[in-house]
Length: 203
Image 1 (cartoon, rainbow, N blue to C red):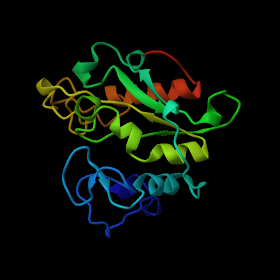
Image 2: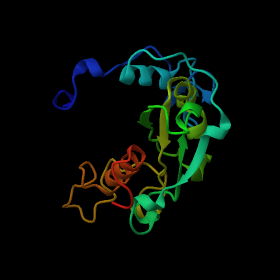
Image 3: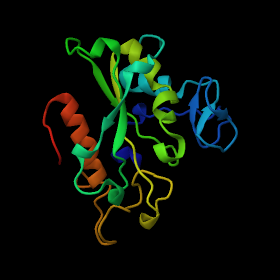
Image 4: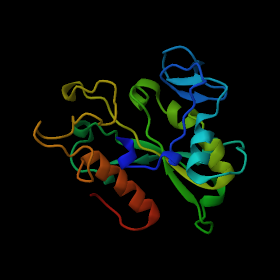
């Protein structure tokens, strides 16, 4: 299935980590083998760093992330209507490395989507603060955007998962959630376009 969308060399796997359902980190979160909130596992494995180097190639070693560089932002300009109806929170977070803040340095952009039950309602901004991306971002001038979903029991989404089964589609006969026409896809693209300076405002 995935051969239709990506070259196999772009996919990295590791089956030697005794992890539960989590983002593996070097030293933060629950015991790696436990299924437990915040679903960030202390696995002695830098999942964020491995992922970023798989995407970008060899990077500078991670450094200290600065708390002041993790900023809350308003998500509402990037979607129409009530966010809760499409399971989008009013606010998200963005980590802007020191070198990227004055606009004179060319910086990379990475968007990191939290998992189910890693939204602000369940664990605050722990995912944005501790998933492990910010230390690499600071060392390599990577702006990291953390969009946030919102739980909605009426949408059968009490855990604020991103839409991977179609809860944002108006009817069972419509399949937009995986396409560019999907409302959450449009929302994410609007954030990227705004940061890149290609367009602004609601989509």
